[in-house]
Picture (tube, rainbow, N blue to C red):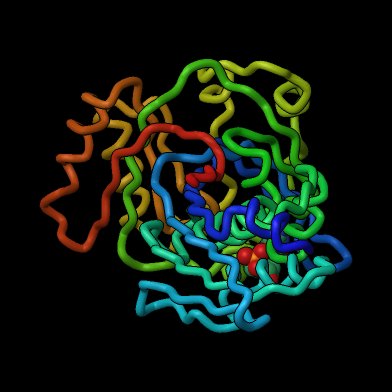
Length: 304
Ligand code: C5P
């Protein structure tokens, strides 16, 4: 790269990595690779981690700092893995300094780690001027985790296969979301195993699901009519508190209240911020619960 070309490239970028909720989550058959096929409608919400990615010409290493004591900034971190996967495909080797500020609760069914990984790919595509398409970025994203490709097609998308078959959909209007995190996690692997041993049969997808997948423009009432999460049965059986949280959200006027992913966060969807704020007051006396009131949002955002 010539000196003048490298001078025109912005050396740093800030990317916002939003959380997701599953408006519908159906778990289908177990595949030969041990994973399950799933079918979901996923939606990003305005609770965001923040990544600052800076190109460094001093050494070719990836250096990651994370502000959370619960999360190592080493090679085990999905952000590191995503950056390494991008750099493997890049001919001109440069170093990277990455800072990750966590706001999304971890192990919470909100896809925080996956969103951070997608935001890393998006940020590097920008800061290294790679010119990759959405599909090229999604190819890098897929081996990193089942939820990672979705975030490149956010804010709303149908997701199938193991998570790699993503189709963006547009939903008219926006909603307010109350997230209630109980302060403990649910291990995804356990939730899949429990579902496999407790359910009698896999319910096939209906024509309604297929039509949602085909539909270009969806309404919130179409989505609300088939909002469900297969993980609720096994996860609520083990954690009755989560069922109570769901019921409280519905009692407070939520149009939909569901477990997100394999949990443990439960969310409620509300027509306005005022109703959402009123609903969240019902949880403030329980100190162990973490609550958030946020709008449905757009995808990972580059903030220069
Ligand atoms: O994708 P992630 O690493 O979060 O998945 C954790 C575990 O959940 C996997 O190791 C697998 O046992 C299970 N899983 C699955 N089918 C999927 C996604 C996850 O069986 N589509």
